[in-house]
Length: 272
Image 1 (cartoon, rainbow, N blue to C red):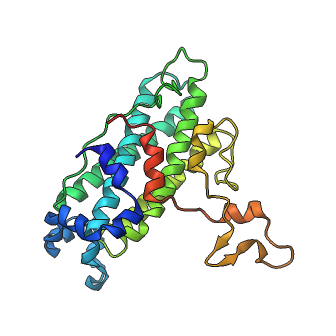
Image 2 (image 1 turned 90 degrees about the vertical axis):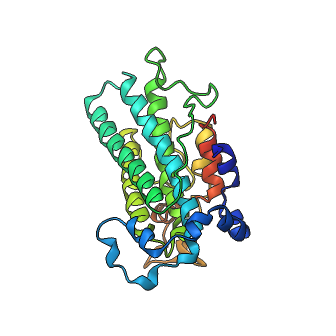
Image 3 (image 1 turned 120 degrees about the vertical axis):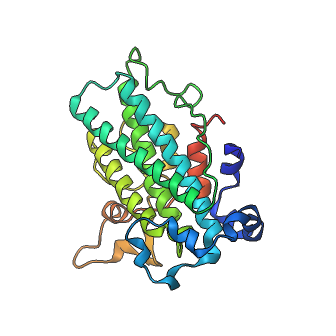
């Protein structure tokens, strides 16, 4: 499967519009038996009532998982290269990166196993370019900005992962993978918080601010986070006494990234 073609086609909107054709494209999953689907469920989830499995949405779930796998491939390789680069000299940061690297490998392995057990072919690992065409040079010890770039890219990838997983919740709704997806999402959120604190920032995002030292190319990761309308309510007007500030309101709610938005960000680092 051509990764760029796959990513170009991946939007929530197109999934909805092309539901029938995508069902054909993933015909092997459409004919999957419930038994096979259950085989992909992590231990303990099989106890979920059968009526919660919206089987007709399996194709959307597969595409959501393929996108998640692409992002996890990216993060997994990034941390492997970061640890091998000798750019990081702080032992505490090395420990954090080692732990996150283990998590990302676990997520990759889980998604590959889940897709395979569900009868789908996991997308192949893309070829990544973490310089984004020469904009960055994070793994070069001779680059005086390498460490700062390495931390900034980690923040961008983790913040993207958090918002992207949340954005795919609707496509996983009713599938056997919803709970696992939410479990991974929460771990990605902890990664993001840890990296942000290493960079001297709050663990959460204020408005659409990317934070000091973040390259302008990462702004797409934060666009939309300034939203204060939740469920049709302006949340800055809620609360007792003084209304919540815009800062506090935006920090209290994390926004989604659509498939198209996550794709645009990831594509900056994908060669093929």
